[in-house]
Length: 360
Ligand SMILES: *Cc1c(COP(=O)(O)O)cnc(C)c1O
Image (cartoon, rainbow, N blue to C red; front, side):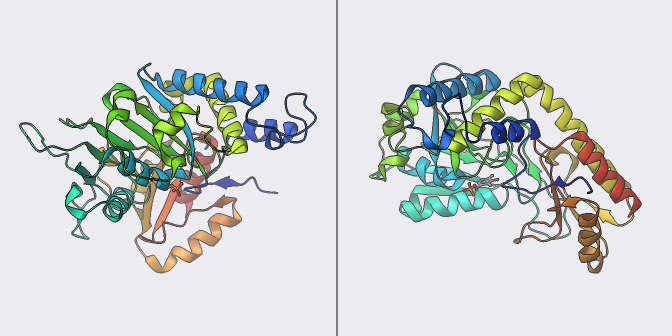
């Protein structure tokens, strides 16, 4: 059988050593004779797992002590609502930077939850014109006296293949949706008020979300909301207000251990940069494919590309699949092709795809 390389954007591949360990432990975890899915989240073994997961994530991301780490339900989109409900109250306003599909969806959700005048948006993408190279221009907020409770943005636009590497100079607390680039490269957590991520790209199974919340943010007035999305309630209950997604939490904990063991975030960042460089180079050199993102905004995690002759796309996808290269179809909103090359994708997998593109 040909080896399968899974380029799915999410749920995405999970490191093989983690999957093998989970398989081995499936019906006998921790010597308990049951799986991790079948034990109380309030008993010692699971509490120890939860504690270690947080310690490992704090170490991997160098999270300062004045930040809380929450393991919650509902993936990335639950956090779209959570940040609004936790921080805006009845008066507060927020600014949303729009750089692609996901940041737009976050703003759309915010506008559903509070009166529209509480949500300001500014488009920072300059690809309104179809022929333009996709890129973003960060606004200059120097001297901006508007009062916002937070500025929200998405550093890696999973659908569009756009990544924002530069820091945003903001007079307001910054909230970042890092669903598709958390743990992919070193970031300075202290520059953010809140970082959140759905787990299914770089952390583990879908359904789980991670929120890293600076403690002063909890002083802001919140709106009435389902208690499971209240950061204050999660704080008071160690992320166990209700039954947490225990199996997802377990797998996330194993992914953190794996990442620490192979060398941590700075180590994987180097590999991620090498993988992306190799793949973009193959696309750029090819007569059949192109990528339309400006080089300074090319995502390290989601490599979007197109065929010059679109009528060949179906053939390309079928051929790729027969070579074990699966899930290369672009997002249903934008079409084209996309290779998601998260932490768990090996250099070998990317190289196989790059060679295939070269030969095609
Ligand atoms: C995948 C993704 C989401 C949505 O996550 P769900 O868990 O499906 O809600 C949100 N933001 C970004 C940037 C994503 O990549």
